[in-house]
Image 1: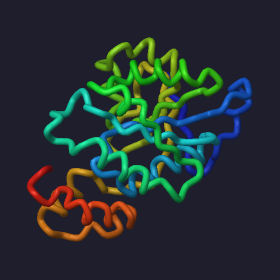
Image 2: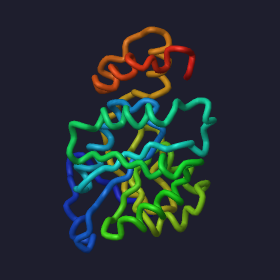
Image 3: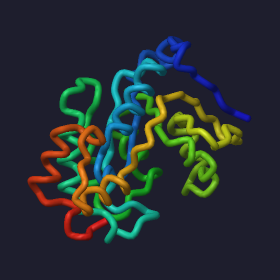
Image 4: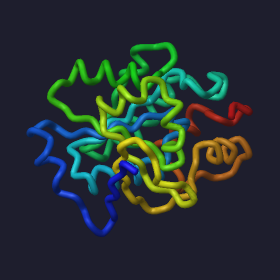
Length: 213
């Protein structure tokens, strides 16, 4: 098993000293349809426990494993991410995948980011439930040479993997975008599930209220 576990109680301070004085940035990709509080908590825990400099949120254009009809227009998702992270100076919005267009493949995104930012070491954040799918990722062996994978622990999912993964704990929050969309469509509140400005944007734009789940 090629994994390292970072607990909530013991915060590592060793990463920066081994990064050749490069800036350390976590990459958090996804549809963010919509972004919610669990996304923000997860990102903050990775930032804190690994002593990273920033977390970059990367909304995808067309996710490779999701029917594009299930995802609203990128412009709405981008704006919701911007609103969700605007009060955190360590959180940034990156539009690499939106600007590139087409289907968003992690390998292509990382190549572009590394070429544009040779002075940064990147840490790619994934949920613990996604680690078991790493063998199916395009160019996974090359990706492991390009970025460090960070797995956020989730109950019921094994940490055993042949790939190098840094494991980080995070408070468990049973919040997901699918349930939020269903709540909006059914006329139920999403208060305290998403940032207030995201909630207001969803209401203003009438998102998810016409059966678009």
